[in-house]
Length: 474
Figure: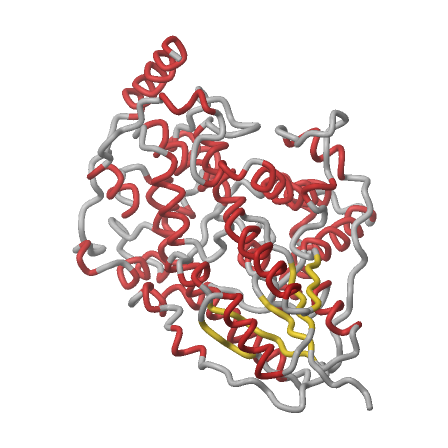
């Protein structure tokens, strides 16, 4: 008789059916497949917006599986314990999963693989989240890359795995293991009333991501390099949340982007560089995981960040610094769970330099508020702007938010989209902010714009003086 013991496909940040090596590995066994999501302590500890967005993604992915004759099994607990329980219930003798690269996940997965093999269970981990596994990219000396441009040059001509079609059907087991209800996990609870505001701004699921990529490459990619820094223009791919949750693979973005470049689309190469920028972030996190928790450059440990950020940090979080570019960006974040990349640089520079507040405070706020939160990209981005990371912007590069506004929002469209105060005919986007924020903030659109939290010139001078002193005494 044929062996009907199923294989467990442990799903994490890979909510897609195409270009999924772990799913392919499960299909190659010829066995019935049990797609399993485990709500373990790592996911339980996610920030409010990421956990909320993961819940939306799981709901959509469950429907996609049902369309293939399968179903998503949901269980809660420590991953090893859950896997052993499902193995015992189903008789499964194999487990496959896509790799994650943060240190906590690596430690967990290594222990699970060791324990399951000791239980005589076949375990296979695959790539899929990255185009280039971090240990396969090295300098001529065999070390890690610390600067992006050499990293880009080392991988731009490397082969990228071919794309994989979605299966028409997934073989199902004779009996499904018991499953939890997704609603019981309360994935959006920490969002409170903000969940209903943010949800319409999310683009959820693999089909939506693929459609968005096609639209971008058909139209906007030609002007991507020139227009991408203007936050009021629909110039970017807007695929960050789908990449974060594995609803689209970087491989597909690379192959289709390369095809667009071959067809003469002017901005396509710059788009490919941005895809590789994400790979660089993972390269750094894998080889130097301290980037997630402390200054990558140890000489920054003595920098005199503000010990008690207090009111200044709160005003930054609320989008009430008195500087239009900063405040519009922070409100965009609270309403949509996302923020334009140019705006991210502006708000990060303002926090770490003009206000001299430690980058960790900003990174943690983004970790709680971003639906496209990604541990590697978030940490690298904050340390890049602050000056404490690898391949960092020089500390003396202090963005002037007013000057940046003149350059990148000359007609004020971005500001009008997100700041309600002073507008007689206020757009819905700006008013949504007041429906999303905690009532305890006691803000309303009829309030006057606040006075600047700090004078730009004074803040810049203070930051440069502190930097000089820390270098002299370091």
